[in-house]
Length: 250
Picture 1 (cartoon, rainbow, N blue to C red):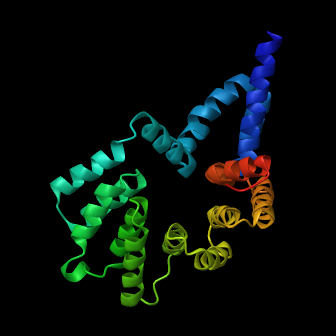
Picture 2 (cartoon, helix red, strand yellow):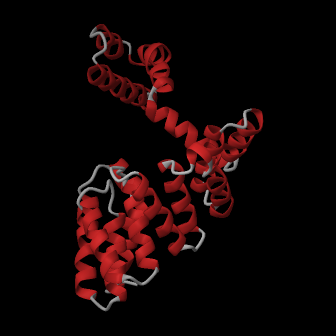
């Protein structure tokens, strides 16, 4: 009995905090604290669960679970939409979905096929093509696509496009140019990927001390960041830690 009472009280306190944080009516506090077990059940059914279902966080969790169980779902649905309505918009969605799934070869085919007529210089298609070409081991072609994009749309801005440009230079062993672009990206890119890629580049160039300083910077930045930010940047945080542990960039 004491254990059940302690558990129900703990749950009631959790819901009471939720009441305060979400600005619910204060009578819920009275119900939860006077009738912890029954009050928690009523609050969960009437308030907490419906709000959780409608929250963006819950929706993201649900989508991530679906993708984990059925990783090909997004591509399959995009294919079906294109079959039902063979529009450029649906083909672009399929190409972008394939790109996100890591199928760079097929994504490149779709992006290339769309570059005709009115869409011959479409910036979204050209950017997607460059990303697919880079992922498909064609950094020179990626640079050509990005150059074409810039010529057709000189005011077009994209952090991902800029990163693709820097990575293509890097893969073509154009180190000084890649370093310059990574450093420019680090000033505004929403994440630490450019810093990590710059550190890896410096390590390959034999500038180990500079590389280690950058990895330390990455680790310090993410150690102070909120949990959801660290979760999104886990790949790069792990990379920084591994290189710091080895005492050198790879």
